[in-house]
Image (cartoon, rainbow, N blue to C red; front, side, top):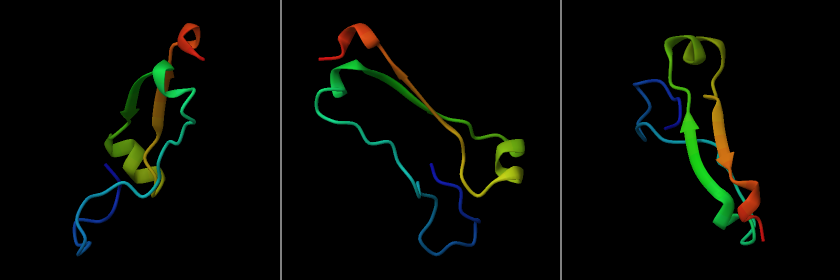
Length: 58
């Protein structure tokens, strides 16, 4: 999820994203958002880690 204050009238939501081409989609394995107190304290964006399996790239 994104990282907006609780008072945001639109609610919790992502404000950025990961984009890939159609050729890369089969290699995409996991997307993980680091949602810790430290991550929220140091930035208005939460770190995102994307895992790919390079052997499955077209």
